[in-house]
Image 1 (cartoon, rainbow, N blue to C red):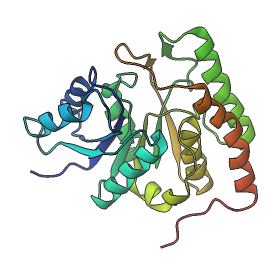
Image 2 (image 1 turned 60 degrees about the horizontal axis):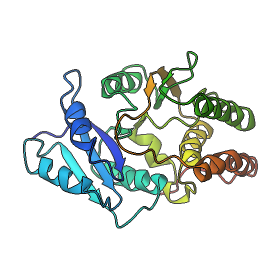
Image 3 (image 1 turned 90 degrees about the vertical axis):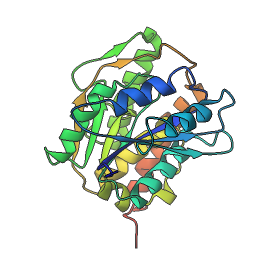
Image 4 (image 1 turned 180 degrees about the vertical axis):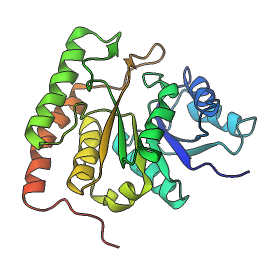
Length: 250
């Protein structure tokens, strides 16, 4: 089987209600072919077992799995996935949630923003054309929206949705960033990757998307993750001012 040029990385923890449907939705896209890498952090609900069954069935060759022992954090999951995708020489590497808050039908739009429009990082943005969030409590919408405004103000990064987790990278971006020096786990991880790509001179585009709150399963959001973002950006700004954020040396 010929390998595709794009892989979608989906971290999971207790996503048995969503995982088969999201995998079939991504694999079933007609406009462009995507492979999928699932990073499962020891889900006790059997999420990884469902993935293995699909890998041994009709999704064989298109779905891949890395199993980790326990909840090690979103950031470390993505870094493990990035290293795997770089090793496999995928040209376009995506971040995506398992719970359908990110619409699989938007994947080709992010792909085109990089592959056809010349961007190095395409962000599925909730806030570039207003506030495009469905079924979130108003307090959470305001918290997320103003957190992005705060991050943009502190860092100077020209991105409206600084905490977005729906993204497409050209492989060269992740090869250039020193992934072993990325320090944050949750919201701040998403900020740190965007900020670092911006400082290294990569071209970033925001693609407007509609974010829909999960219908099944339990949210992994916590106050600690949000607090990490608020205070972490100050550390990022200081690191930038002191020249500590650099390209990876080979």
